[in-house]
Length: 444
Image (cartoon, rainbow, N blue to C red):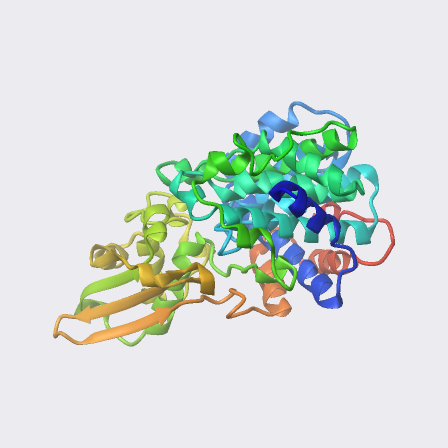
């Protein structure tokens, strides 16, 4: 049995979710809404431009969109809700996959479920399927996919959304395989946002959600994709990597949705270990006594998040130096540091003294390690050091559901009152059992 077919059979076998699985899915959904509130507000100019293009097209009123008073075609709803969810870099992710999952899966599944009238149980099974597909496929293609310049959130995300939405249609293993196969020819997403103008990054999960829905719709109509769509001579893996880690395609002894991390800071995950290290060092040294700050970190982090002097809020998301300097000075990092960037004389002076040093030991895919070691060298020769291999929010250093609800409240500040947020939380936690799905997007 080939890779694509075997994976599709595994995905079709995901049926009865445990209480722990359902609890984790509820937490992931809560986290998506926190990220969406923040992304809608912080990426307002980009969101507005995209919305004017998409909403002007109108179309059938099928699915709810965040912050809108009417429904739009399911594909458009999936696209816009994914764009909003990625605007602040606060959405969940997976280290082995090196990308984000919920930001495209939740909008895609919710949009199609809204359109076709799915049950809660089917929605949860579809989400579990999507997370499983995303992590397995993306992890199997890493690190080659990054080295080739592809963004796994968009590339593997399209395939994952197709698989998840095929489950909403209750297609069998062959139908899931066809949906994935069709999605392979629609997937896209480059890391070029890291070179300049990173505000466009949300287009990658947006297109993953939209095209994943479309692929599943086609599969539901009986359209078949190419066989061996992943592993074939001209297949998806051939396009994105030179080496396939087949062990990742076989999954684990638990659903991989439990291996996702949550983010406390509105910046790329590659900055988070530095932020946590700086928070631990805050107050232990006076900035004017520092000669140099050495940050030992893996090369991918430097490549993707090494903007030294961010000029706007979008560039702050991809600056190890800026986020670390702000945290070392204030003891914390948050949304208020982004817009506009807090490029004070004190912050710039610290950035001038930060040196990023490639260190392969800070990344170990087998142990799920993507960390950083921060060494402060004082003018008198003394050294202070802090190593963080797993930032707060990683599975190895987990947050509680209450932490995520608090994150939701913080991200929604100024946009929703406590009553509306309580209603949103209640609707999300109510997604279980055989009742008809009621899209929480309608609360906002």
